[in-house]
Length: 241
Image (cartoon, rainbow, N blue to C red; front, top):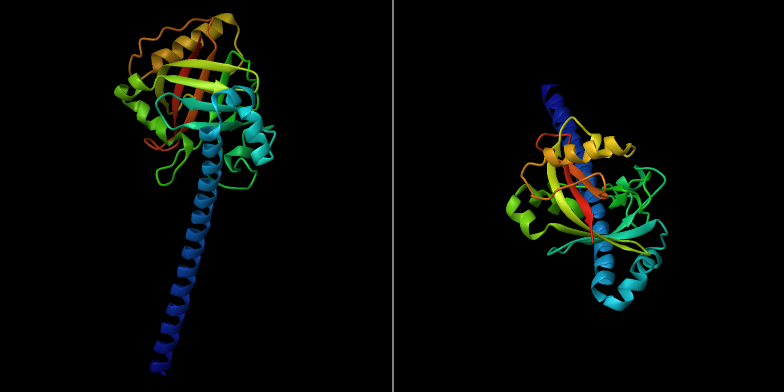
């Protein structure tokens, strides 16, 4: 009898281990598929960005992205000087869709870079979001480099292109938002806006030496940060000629 009980227990253990292995393998396979799909999309837009001539780029780079991905949500292109970052920017009717969808609109937890749904590209303050990850590639991984001032000094310029315009920005603040997320607010009167810009500048973890005033248009880049958990890395830049 004891022998049969042992056999039964062993059989249950084997089944349970097999179930765990299958579950883990399934999870790993799903994650790998998402990473592979994200990489495919990245390769497509990087090929467009690198193969398009300067003359063509000035005319239709955004339209080229739209046509390639069959996605009119693509409204711009974000790039940072002296880096490989040159990425299409999408915009939906909320701030949730592109958290878990790629530019071809396939569902994917690695998401896309996107403009806040409340914004117009001509607003005095615009916010662009993108995922960060400790394990896999995302476009905004590189923003962590800005925690070092030495990196900022040679990568302080940001360019945001739309179908009709090109906007150049100078980074003036880099900081970690832990429990005060007023950087996502958009509605200010003149005094409130000036105070907000000064607040952003004073939050910086190092002095960039870049001054701001209530007359400046600004760009906020936001991505997740993991020290502490639940925080965000914020890069703020002002529009320059």
